[in-house]
Image 1 (cartoon, rainbow, N blue to C red):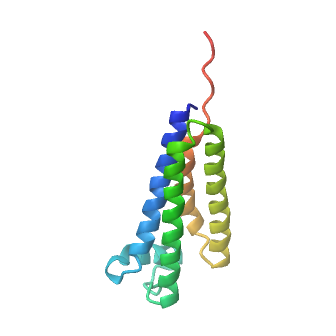
Image 2: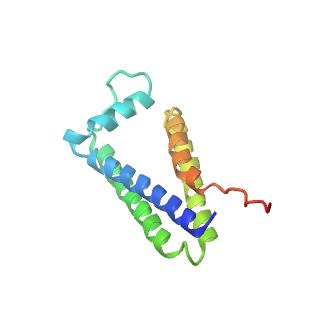
Image 3: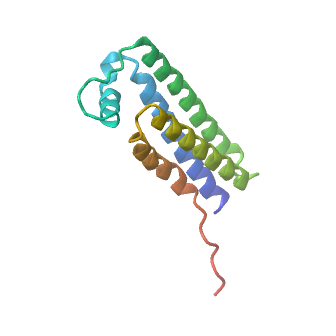
Length: 142
């Protein structure tokens, strides 16, 4: 992979993570919370409308998650601009390590919270984040 490929892949992950953080933050506002409420109801089976975002604790944790994700995403965006040229492989490994830790911790938390179906959605996000940073074989001389 070239430094430009790594920068592009890291930027893509940064944008996805910032968008996820903003989606979480907006869900704190009742008028914007329905998509996340529906997703939560789908993940925490059965689809019965019983899962809500109304509790103050739930809304606080959504705001905290939104801030953490937005901050993580902005960090990736800034590092993709500065670190990709001087230490591209270190940037790539750091991004992949962050994604792996998120996936394991979030997945374990999902299972412990009784929502193992969340792991399926997380797999989709993981592929979106990791795919642009996969290594490609070096071209073989002809």
